[in-house]
Length: 145
Image (cartoon, rainbow, N blue to C red; front, side, top):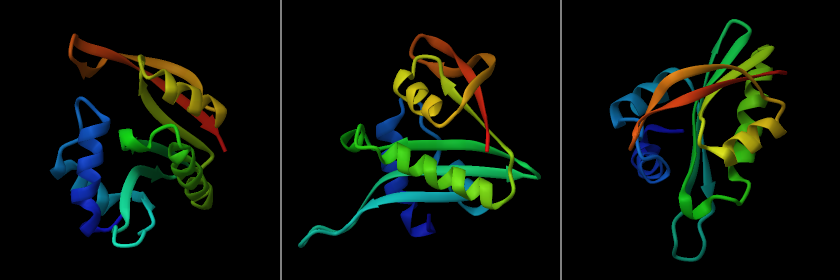
């Protein structure tokens, strides 16, 4: 993810989440962590388009998935899987042995994908995410590489 990608990344972030990350936090993440984008290639007169992004933090032998989002128009096309494969490979290249992430309790498609990558539930963070009904629990998942 380049600085020049941030506007397109924020468009996807806002479309993908009811409560998106702020532009300032996204810019700070882009400077501090491993950030990737999934870009559809240019076709004819249409420019390339960013359809997804992921952010991973690594510390010592652990990694944390900070954010992964796919534009709603591109969901269910395995873009999330490709982003996850990339960030897990990166974590492995940094000698990480365990990867953590949080997911909204209601996000069943994400649960399905994470379980396919070997993530298992290791905890719950009560009332962690804002929601239209007030708050929602985050399920903490982990996998060993």
